[in-house]
Amino acid sequence: MTQDTDVLLDEKRIFKPSEAVIEKAHIKEWESELEKGKDIEKYWSEKAEQFTWFRKWDKVLDGSEKPFYKWFVNGKINMAYNAVDRWINTEKRNQVAILYVNERGDEKKITYYELYREVNKFANALKNIGVKKGDKVSMYLPMCPELLIAMLACTKIGAIHSIVYSGLSVGALVERIEDADSKILITADGTFRRGKIIDLKKISDEAVQMSPIVETIIVVKNAGNPIKISELSGREVMYSSLIEGEPSECEPEMLDAEDPLYILYTSGSTGKPKGVLHTTGGYMVGVATTLKNVFDIHEDDLWWCTADIGWVTGHSYIAYGPLLLGTTTLVYEGAPDYPDPGAWWRIVEKYGVTKFYTAPTAIRHLMRFGNKYPSKHDLSSLRILGSVGEPINPEAWIWYHENIGKGEVPIMDTWWQTETGMYLISPLPVTPLKPGSATRPLPGIEAEIMDADGNPVPLGKGGLLVIKTPWPAMLRTLYKDPERYIKTYWEIVPGGVYTAGDIARKDEDGYFWIQGRSDDVLKISGHRIGTSEVESAFVGHPAVAEAAVIGKADPIKGEVIKAFIILKEDNRLDSKVIEELKNHVRHELGPVAVVGEIIQMEKLPKTRSGKIMRRVLRARERGEDIGDTSTLEE
Ligand code: WTA
Image 1 (cartoon, rainbow, N blue to C red):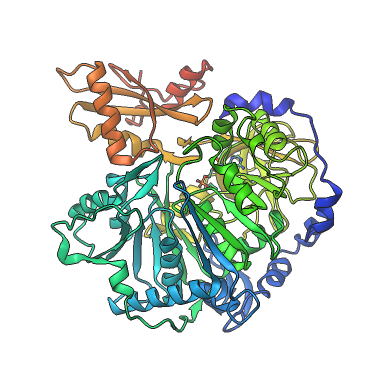
Image 2: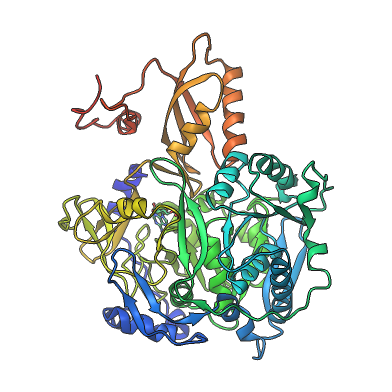
C-alpha cells in the first residue's frame, strides 16, 4: 500500500471529538490515560480485576523466559465463564447476547441465558465424544450462532479451537487441520453469499478425505442445503442430534491463565501458514479492555463488527470482546451489497446499531455507489465508527465520516494483528483524529519506528514498526514452532522488541501512519494472504513449473494477486489456461485469493541461493528503483 504514502503524509486535517462523545466516554482524558498506562503491570492488573478469577494471579507479568512472556501467572480462570456464565445471575440474564441477521433478512436473537444453555449442551456433547482439555477442534463454519457457541463450548472445557475462515478452500483447510492435529472438524451444510449457497460440507468432505486424522465431523444445519451423506458417513454426526438430551449445565474447567485458548493460522512471508497461539487470561483482559475503551462500550450498545469470525477481528471483537463486556453483538451472514448496496445501512437503521466497525475495502466498495444508499436510511443511532485491516485512505475516511457518521461520529482506526490479539495503536473516542492515522499507541503499549539496527528513525521517515514492551493479549508462540516465533518476531530488530512486519512513520505529534507490510504478505480486501501459499497453489497446477507472486494495487480491494509464472514445456498461456489457473488457485485457497494478472516468464529473478526476489518484481511493477541487486543471480 505504499502507493498511498504521499497522500497520507500530506494529510493535515484534524477532527476534534464532539462534546456529546466526550460526555458519554468512559475515558474522558486521553493524555492522562496514556500516563496511567506507563506502569504496565499496574495498568493491566487493574483491568484484570473486573473478571472472575477462580484463583488470583501471583505475578502480573513474567519475563524470565523472553520472548515467551507469561501474564497473570498462576491465575485460574475460564473464558466462557466470564463471557457468559457471569451474566446469568445479573440483570443481563435476558438481554440479547447474539443478534444474528443474514442477507435474506432472517434473524435470531439469543439471550445470555439461552447462550449459557446452548454452550453447556454443546460442551457436554463434546466431552461425550471424548474431547478433553488441550484437544484441538477445527471449525469451518459460516457466521452462524453455532460458531460462537462452539468456540465458547471449547473454552468451557479447555479444548483449543482452530477456526478456518469459510472463504478459504480445500487446500488451506487440509493444511490447517493437519498442522493443528485436530481430530474433530465442525462444519455446516452451507453459507449464504449474494443469494447463493456455498456448500461448506462439500469442501469439508474433500478436505477430510485427505486428512485421515479427523475422527468426527460435526455438521451444523445452517443454510437449509440438502446434506449429502458422504462416504465418510461413519464419522459424521449432525450437531442437532449430538446435543439432543444433553444437560444444560456444565462446570467450567479451571484453566490456567496461560492455558491455550486458540490457534489461528495466519500468513507469513515464507513457508506454511503460522499457527498463532493465544492463551486465556491475558487475552481476555486485553481484548475486553481495548474494546471497552476504544469503542466506549456501554450496557445499551448494539455492537456490529462486520468482519468474519474466521479472522482474528472476529475472534476478538465479534465473539469474545463484546460478550466479556456483556453487550449485544450483531453477527451478520452475507455480503455487504446484497440484495443491494444499502444492505448494511438498512440493518443499522432497523436494529439501531450504535457502534459499527468495518474494513477500508468495504468502505471503498460501498463508496462507489455514492450517498444514494446511506441517505435512504436513518443512521442516527451510530455513535462510533471503526476501521481495521489495512491503512484507510483519507478519501475513504472522509466519505465514511460524512456519509455514515454525518460529519459527527468519530472513526477509530485500529491497528493490530492476528499476533497482537488486541488493538495496539488506536485512538480513543476523545482523541483528535487525522484521517489515515491510527493515532498513537493505546495506554499500556509502547511502540516505535526503528531501523533494522534498532535505532529509532527520525520523525516523518519510514521504518519498521516495533512494539517495545509486552502486552497481555500477545501471541505466546507459533504452534509447534517456537524457533520460528523467535525468528519472525523477536530477532528482526535487536533489543528484544517485537517486529510487526509493517512499515510506518511517526509525525511531529507522535501519530503513527501505517503504510503497509514490510514483507511479502498480501492484503486482499483486508484478508491476509501469504505469497508463498499462493505460489504453491500455482505450482500445484500441472502446467506450472515455477511461480512468483506479488501484490498489485487495486482501487477497491487494496491489492490483488499478480503472478509471474514459468510454464512447463509445451504449455502456452492462452485465455483458457489463464481461466484454468484462476479456478485452480480459487479451488485451493478460496475466493479470497483474487488473481488480477498472470504473466508468463522465461526466468524469475532469484538470489544465487535460489530464493525468488519478489522485491525486484515489485519494484518493477511500481516503477521504482530495484535497489541492491548484489545477491541477484544474474
Ligand atoms: C494491517 C488484522 C493499517 C497491517 C487485525 C497488519 C492495518 C496486518 C490496520 C495484520 C490499520 C491492520 N491500519 N494497517 N488500522 N489494521 N493492518 O493479522 O499490515 O489479518 O500487519 O489482522 O493488517 O493483519 P491481520
